[in-house]
Image (cartoon, rainbow, N blue to C red; front, side, top):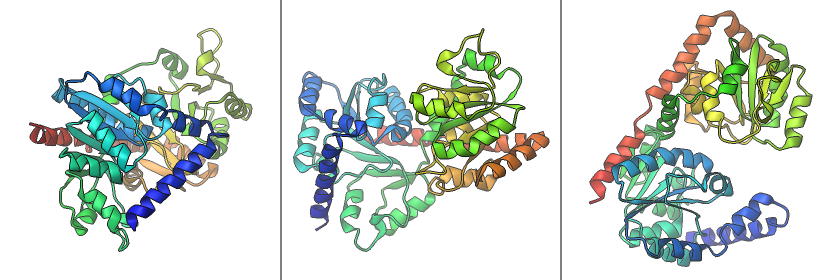
Length: 414
C-alpha cells in the first residue's frame, strides 16, 4: 500500500509540474532540464574508466551542506570522479558550472525503471544523499547493486512519518542506508527507537563550509570603501515581510550603514525597496568611487556574494523568519555578527534555537522590537561584542562533521 501511495503522489506531482510549465518559469526549468537526460548521461559516462562518487542534493541549501564533503572527498580520493545531481532548478541552475564536480545533472524522476537504469549507467562506487533526500526506488536500486549508501547532515523530528505507526514504508527506506550521519543526539535516538543503529552524530557540515569561507579572507574593495569607519548591518536574503520591518530601522538608525541583499533581485522589487528608503542608496552594479561616496545603503543586485559580505557586519539580519523558513544564519555567525531574524519561522532550525538560548541571536517581532534591541546594543558596546563572540564561538565548536564522514569513506572504500 505504501509503495502504491508513494508512486501515485509522485505521478500527481509530476503532472502538476507539467501543467505549471504554462505559467511558471521554475517549473519550465524543472521539466526542460530532464528532457533527453539519459542520452546526455550516457554520452558523459561512455568512456569513463574511473570510480564515481555520486552526491545528490535537493537544492541549493543542501548543496552548501554537500560541498565541503565533496571537496574533502576529492582530496582524499583524487582519482575518483564526482557526480552531482539536483532535484530542483534552484540548485542546478545556480551550480551547474560548479568546478568541484566532474558531472552535474538533474536527478531523473524516482521510478523503478529510472533508478535501475541510472545506477547501471553511472555505476557509482559510493552514493551520498544530503539531509532529507530519501528516495524509495533509488535507494532500493543502489542497495541491490551492492553500493554503499550514505546520508549526512540528516536531522529528524518526532512528527515525521518515519516515527508514526503508519510509517512502515518510509522506515524501510531508511533501513537501506549503509550509514546515516545525523546532526544531533535527538535524531540518533529517534532512529535507534525504530531499529536503525547504523547512525553517527557528526553534526552539520554547513559549519565546516562557513568556517572555510571565513578563513579565506576575501575582501571586496567596494564594500571597504562603502563601510569606511561606520558600523554596518548586513541584511541577507530578505523578503517583503522582512523589509517592512527593516525599512523603518534603516531610516531611523543613521549612525549605521546597511547592506541589503534581497532574496528577489528583479528590478521592480529593487525599485520598490529603494523608493521607501529616506536615506541615500544605490545598487552594487552601479557602484563607482565618484558617485557612491554619499550612499548610506548599498543594495546587492547579484547572486553569490552574500556569504562574503557578512565579514563586514557588526549586525546581521537574516531573512525568511516571517515567511516559510529562515535562511542560513551560520554564514553570518562564523564572522561574529550579532544576529537578528523574524520570530515566526525559525523553530525548525537548530542553530537558530541554540544561538537564541546562548544570546548570540535574537528573534524579533516587529520594527519596535528590533529598534529597542539595537538601541540597547549601541548603548552598551561590550554587550554587543559579547553576543558577537558567542556567534563565532558557536561555529568554531561545531566544525568537524566533514572529517568524520571522510574517515568512514576511507574505511568503506577499498
